[in-house]
Amino acid sequence: MNIVKFVLDQLSGEALGRLSSLIGEEQEKTGVAIRAAVPAVFSVLSKLITSGSAGTEGLITALKSVEPISPEGQGGLGDLISGEGAGALLEKGSSILSSLLKGETLSALIQVLSKFTGLEGGSVKSLLGYLVPMILSVIAGQFRGKVPTADALASIFAEQRANITGAMPGGLSLAELPNLGGIGAAVSAAAADQAGGLPSWLLPVAAIVALAALGWYFLGQPAAEPEQLPPGPGLMPPMVRQDAPPSVEAQKGGVPEVLDATQLGTDLSAVYSTLTQTLVDVKDDATAEAALPKLTDLGVQIDGLKALWEKLPEAGRAAIAKITSENLAKLKELVVQVLELPGVGDKLKPILDVLLEKLATLGGT
Image (cartoon, rainbow, N blue to C red):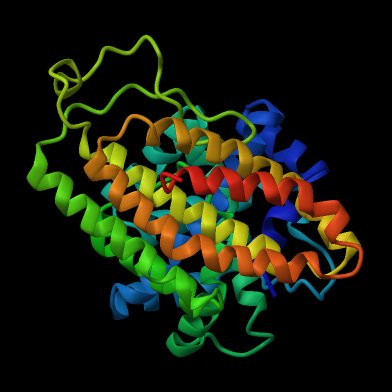
């Protein structure tokens, strides 16, 4: 059961309209924010399990304070924000956020989501206040009347790691959050994909990105980060403004900043992860039809990565090319298997051929 997808599906339609009204934002922008904030919250909660007994105990206490919601049960998340209950939900969510996360971690999370979505920090904080108790209610529903334990929580998040990674929009990184980022986090993300049931060939991806980051560090110091525009509804990676002044290294014709190389590797890893999970979910004609919008979005994201790839010097390209060489062949094998399914080949072959061709260009071929 993909509980991340369940939450996202529940927060569409009428529920999306209610949330938009509650936080005072346009529905389209709220939808983008929800698709970013939900997997981000799941990711942060999963880190609490590995942060020590205090984090786990705090999460267990929070789970006991919400009403469990099971996908197989009656009612849904939309009911929680209807009528007068919305105010109580926001109050509870804000309290839970303050108790689970240190002030600096919560502030950093709000800042990251605000920068990615283009929403004001106050709107993001309110949205998180509504979302957190909803997400906890769905997690609590997984226990089906049993008392939450540390081992059971760890098992649930291990099962959902691939779903969390797959739902994370391209270009969104939690590396700026205290104790959640850095090279170690990238390696953990790759291990998470493995534990969540994705093919084992994705495991080396983040490790390669980490090596690339170290290489960039010794090649040259990073310049100031270029100004970025917030992502649009298609969840494309943030694009560098054309009118932004070039970095000092760029003016000198030197090495681009560290962030460009590592971000490209991280986003490419996310594309492989999302594409793999999307193909694994294809079972027949109906699921193939449902996969088409996500495959189209991935094509747009790959185009954005290609633009960054073209700006990298040979040293950076070599690291990214290694990611492609170790993953593209396996992905092609999966594509062949999926296209052999009845009613799938004619529907997905044209777009998958294009995606594979685009990914190959990121390997220098």
